[in-house]
Length: 57
Image 1 (cartoon, helix red, strand yellow):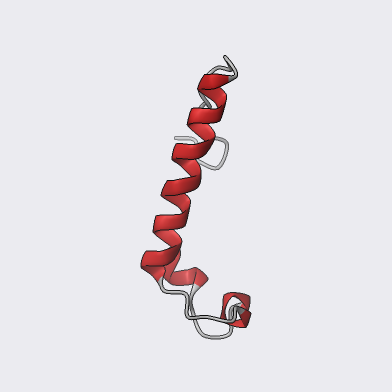
Image 2: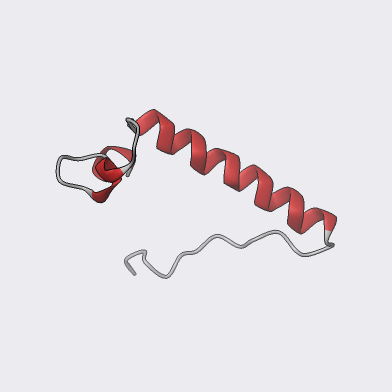
């Protein structure tokens, strides 16, 4: 996913700085930790794994 987001021609190249795949992975991990902490502090349940995109067998 991170490689696809930084492929030539993608809009991420409009940023005023270089964005590498590792930067995207780091940002996604950071927001995941933040959102889990906010949910926990608010007493909300943990998010459930989204599975609708998986093929049925």
